[in-house]
Image (tube, rainbow, N blue to C red):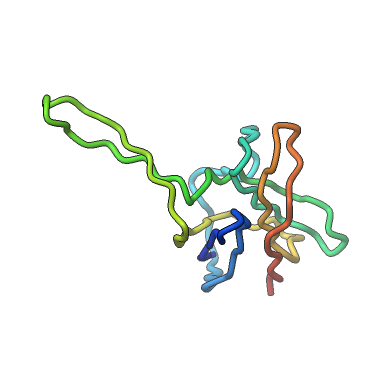
Length: 123
C-alpha cells in the first residue's frame, strides 16, 4: 500500500491512499507481529476484521522525519535530521486471512493512545 502524508500548519497529519497492490506470496520476514511500541509521531498500521478487531499491528517510524548520514568537512560521518511537510511512504504486509480493512493511526502520547488517520477496505 502506498500512501501520501501531509502535515498542515497546525501539525495535524492527513493521509491519503495512492494505490494498493495485492499479490499472492509470503514475505520473508513478518514485521506485523513486532513488539516495538513506537513513540509519539510514529504510525500504527492495523489489520482489522469485519468487527474492527485488531488482527495484526505494525509500527511505522514517522515518515515525515528523515535522518541522513553524510561525510562532513573533517571527513567524519555526521547525521542530519530533516522534518518534512509531506512525503510518500509504502507499507508491505502479509495479510491475515480475515483482514477486511487497514487502519493507519498516529501514536499521540507515551501512553500509546493513538488517533485514526485513515481506514481502507481490503477487497
